[in-house]
Image (cartoon, rainbow, N blue to C red; front, side, top):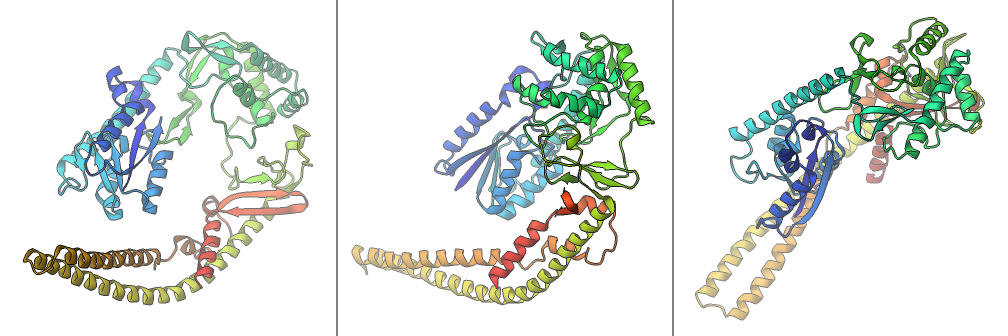
Length: 528
């Protein structure tokens, strides 16, 4: 038996709880508790023991890494038993936890044990008991209430002018004596001052970025990492460079005036990382909370200059179906969208650095749409062909399943006959009709036959499970796009992973699920 101990703790578990409670939920305590339970449980003590852990993840988010790996193992049949400290460690979403415990795991033949809840799915009545349902519901409601309390506590502290972000902005560091207070990081602050000064002198953000790159000034990400900050940044490569966006981010950051700014974005769902931007009027801004790097007057002047250059207030574009999907095939960076004289995507890396052999190549948006549509049609035609092959194959699969079913029935009947022979053999031995030597010899022969039948039965059952007669969702999805004549934002959002643009108008379109289609094609070809 393969047993997995699943451990989890979230930031919320340590934010508003008393010290003793925090320690009881710690990863170390969960590990000790579950290991002791497994090693002293008669059914589990000889099992192969493994551990999966999510440290710092909310129980309402079921896309956490350890949980994803656990469920993948369950799908592969690589787990026979899951052990957790209590239901809340597995998850705090009432409906999701209940579905796994009462439906998914029993269907997959996986035993689920929650130690503190005295729950074992092998015991009749535990799965659908009222007590279990109430506990999972209470954990769910508690998580929602806890999330609201944490948000309220953080907001209250932010309104008092305390710095609440996990990481200090470029140009600052956290005060070693007070993590909610910022102190100036002079080497980086000097770069911030220079960026603002260049902006005041009329330099564009592109010109500022180019100058910084030419002089070898490392970017905020590379600087922070050199200072030991382990934050995970989204970037194309570790050796990144200054661009207009990174300069503009600094020029728009009001914290350089000595203000604490909180609440610029908000989590859309408790426990998940997705956020949405909030209106500026809803931000919490407390002035003069730490030493300013930039004067308020200089900051306001730069904001006015940026607004004038844009000729309109800054606002995100909402009419870009290809946003964050078009990239330069050479340097890997996102391409810039130009609207005049026509809509076109162009690589702007050469404006900032000569590190890459990019020449400002680009492609009209209309050509990108045509390439995407052609790629979708290609995979739609492939899906139609695979559907025909799969339909023919399923007829063969059904015949094979019938044959396997007959063999399984015959094996089961043979096993019943052998079980009867074992019983009869024992009775003859007990009545003195057989010597011990003859009894053991005949028993060994029958037992070997039973084991052979068991092995053959398992192999046939696995073959039946592997031969699915269901239509692939990917095939069905792409068949639905076989006749489309125009793209919509919804289609692009669902199907397009990225488009790489190379010089001479060479395009590479990467679609979601295309790898699965090609994998299905290989499987069907291999199956004949």
